Image (tube, rainbow, N blue to C red; front, side):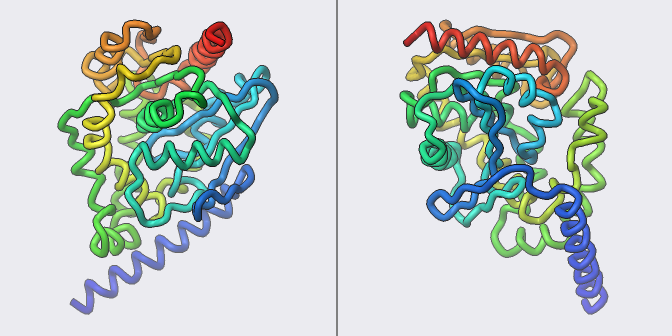
Length: 309
C-alpha cells in the first residue's frame, strides 16, 4: 500500500508539472466574461453579423482557430468562440452540465456581449448545445449549422471508456493521477480516428495545444460530457421538430465517430427543410479537413437567415 501511495503521489506531481507546462505554452488567447459564477474564456474576431462557434468534447477555442475556420469567417462576420465550461480557460462549477445548461449560460453570455441574433455552428458534442440553444432561445438563433453531430441515442463504447473521471471522489483521484497518463498514451490513436480516413492535418498536429486536453480539469469536463451524451440525445430528440429556423447539416461521409446514417442523415429526414451536405472521403473533423466547405455552409446559413427576416 505504501508503494502504491508513493506511485500515485509521484503521478500527481508529474501531472501537475505537465499541466503547468501546458498552460505556460498555451496561455489564454482571448478575454474573460463572468456569467452567473462561471468564468468564460472567449475570443471575438472580425465584424458584421454575429456567428457563434461551439466546440465539441475534449477540445477548446483552438479547435476553430487552428483549423482556419475563424479566419475564413472573420473576413465577413463577427465571430465569437467560447471555451465551454471546463475546457481551455473556462471554469466549470460542480453541477449537471447538460446541453440545456450550456445553452442557458451561452444565452446570458451572448447577451452580455450585445448579441441579439446569430448564426450558430456546433461541432460534435457542440451540436447538442447548438440545438439546445435554438430550443431555449429561438429568437437568438437565426440559423443552425450542425457539423458531425450526435443526435440520437446509441450504445457507445467511448461513453463507458471515458466516463470514470466524472465519478465524484474516485474520479477526482483518477484525473489527478492515472487518467492523464492513460489519456496521453491513448491520444495519438484517438486523434487519428477523429480524422480517419483522412490523415491528421499538419496544422492540427503542429499547432493544436494537445497537452491542454490532458489537464485534470479538462479530463473531468470531457468525462462528464461523455457520460451525458446519450441521455442528452434521448431528451433532445423529442424536440427537433420544434426547430423552425434554417438548418444546415454537414458531415464527412466516412465519419468513424458519429455514424452518418444513424445520426446526420436521420436528422435530415426528420427535418425536411434542412440542407444536408455530405463531404466524401472525410471523417469527423470536417472543419479541419474542409474549412472552406464549412465556411461556405455558414455563409449560406447566414443568407437564409437574412432572407427569412
